[in-house]
Length: 52
Image 1: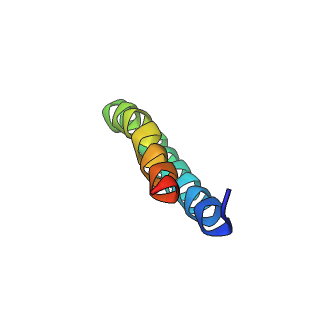
Image 2: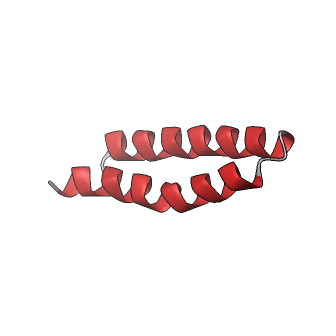
């Protein structure tokens, strides 16, 4: 895996972790579920960019 891809995946992880933590603090179960649903597609997009 390329270093740029690893950096992008790490940044995505940090972004989603912060967003989920904020949603938990705000008791926003709807937003938590949305973020959980979006994450795999966002990570897959980064992985597909590497393969292109």
